[in-house]
Image (cartoon, rainbow, N blue to C red):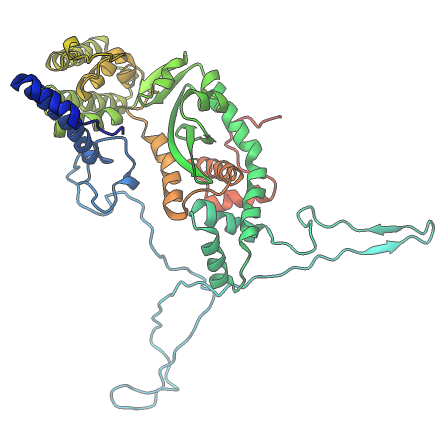
Length: 488
């Protein structure tokens, strides 16, 4: 934000000498500048994760009251009828049985050693055994041929490559704790020492992550190509990340079943071109209002959760009559689409769509009348470019220009109402930064992107993260059955 230039002593004296009118004009101009700056600062302070695109991590301790598109269901809290819960269930064959005998009557103290028990009551305790690091030594024979005199050595297993190394399970757990649970390197070492009585080096954990990234790299390349060439609707979003103390940008592209991450030093089209998914994509992308997206020729669908947050901000800061009805209309269409989908219908009727389009247009026009363009007379001497417009008018112009993209969820049921899936995929980056801070190198950031994309995809397809890592270290990383393996 540029510093405000206030009139200096010379300008004030000049206005004073010119008379009351000049003093009043100078005073009014200064007040307008200061009021504008105050308004801008107050708007910044009023923004939070509920009414803007700011992440929840930026709210600090003064978090706003929760707000969600979901309405109260009037159901009682807890598990609902038919819900399959998770609880401890007795087992028929416990690992250990401890017997406690009755030797004496608790009332008259008579001996009961020889009396047969009428029944047995039992309780079961589920616990974990103390685990220690287990060392397996692999020995191969070396024999010398009596015919030619040369040595022949048996082969070590393929995964045993060094004189001393960690095995698949240990490396899988290291990577799981560091990348899936975001536990920093030092604390991961502490966890291993506490749990297993063995403390690995921080470099060992980093090396395990690098090895896992190398194993899953072909999987992520296959997912990237599948997203680019075979999906009909994908979501894309970006967020800032710090590498080596500098600001980079992390982009995620994905669906309900696939996740791909990539980072770049630049934001917007430069990064999108370098990642090379969106330039080749020809179907529909769900995204926010970032102008870079509209430089591509794919079909667009705008995230209405963003629009609702901006509308909520306007309602709080610049209340006008059209804002509430427009929010209500978007949510009404969303509910109608969900109802129709539950009835196994593939689309709304043309008449219903026309009604919603008309209501939408009417509210946009109402908003534009309440927010006219800035007066050309307000242009200052030497000022170039477009005159600054109000936040409400800026939003209305976007909603008018991209009407088809805003209501794409209504005309095409494959399109979601919002881009929340991409935002959820990005949230893990914010958790990582909150716990561990920035990445020290681009190499570390790249490792994180490969592993997180792999684990996110595995989880979306019902796989456990630790099991997926075991498969990766065994050289057979998990790949969804509908994705064609990369041949390159």
